[in-house]
Length: 281
Image (cartoon, rainbow, N blue to C red; front, top):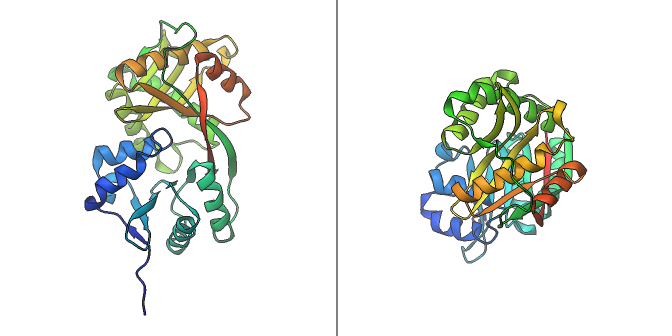
């Protein structure tokens, strides 16, 4: 007798069950929660498919977002095997796997024999969060970036991305799409920077947000000014601004080997609430 596959592409009728599953870990899953809340589950709007894994009773027990990134959510062993098989059949379409290390690393173990070597595997990225005002004085010069300053901010965003990921986001014709993303963050009031005489000294963006949690990405200090405390004071300002205008809990994840950044975040008041992993292609 044929059995129905336990995985399927989720649709609008699954919305309530999806949000209930995402609510189990609101900090780790803020990226996907923010997308689902904003645009729903249609792949064209979501930017990818959302796969669901159901148990024998039809209850949704795990998720995996399959878009530019492959992002497993609440993914137990059986779900990971099913998601890996689905990803293997369709071929690699993502630029990375990212999410809680307990899900990402086993998923990569299942996919590696079929997808080949990754460009980089970052297996330990502390997930940090704070729900309090910063413990150090914020930089008063850090503010929300204005829409007319996108052209000033964009080179710093490209430099940060290239330094962090190892590839420029504008290669291969990606320039217009990346500029549109930066413009969207600026227009939504979620880009923060210290800008002096047309030069970005520090910047960071809130890349995902729900009513309760937001996630900061793209933290960058002008290389010529590093080691002077700009990053710590700048992040303190971002925490204060984001908690006031975006969400009460501010989170981010950082490479475990980035000791200067980890010390800076600790001084600001972040504490570890989980561990992420990223596999980059």
